[in-house]
Image 1 (cartoon, protein in one colour):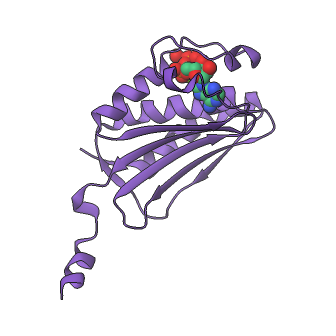
Image 2: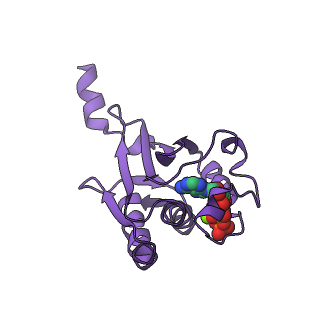
Image 3: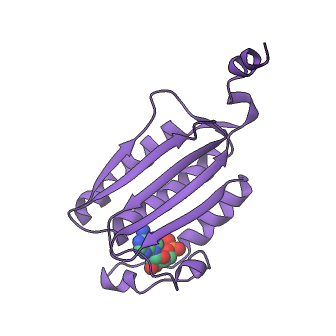
Length: 167
Ligand code: ATP
Ligand code: MG
């Protein structure tokens, strides 16, 4: 089914606003003006971004921002949602295991956050089912960025432009 990522992200951020306020982070939403459609399951995609934004709030830093950005590449072949925080980040040794079930890096203890370690395992599973890719980037001390990259469906890659290219 076609899902509008703009609407999904608005809803997710709205729902997590109270948690963000409690933790002292400000969620900043950077969205395009027009809808961005991908093929998929709306509820599952909500779950993905709920997990990522919740993590960014929990493991980010109080007083700083969490930035959620939706953008498509210049060639419009990839749609990227990125959830970025400015907390302690994730040490390189933890990165490869982060999406394993029940895996938690020690930063979770330092901010005293509870969790089961299942969130990212579910995220990875759903992302794979959508033929998308989860890319995690982090520099210790500077924060972390969780990027979900969707291949843009052929339908929305602007057929008008393609026609013009050939004439
Ligand atoms: P759950 O999501 O099931 O409530 P959880 O948040 O601990 O529990 P995951 O969402 O799978 O589990 O995250 C796994 C671990 O990855 C976390 O415990 C934390 O150590 C680390 N982590 C996740 N997101 C971040 C982040 N933005 N910054 C730093 N560490 C993170
Ligand atoms: Mg989590």
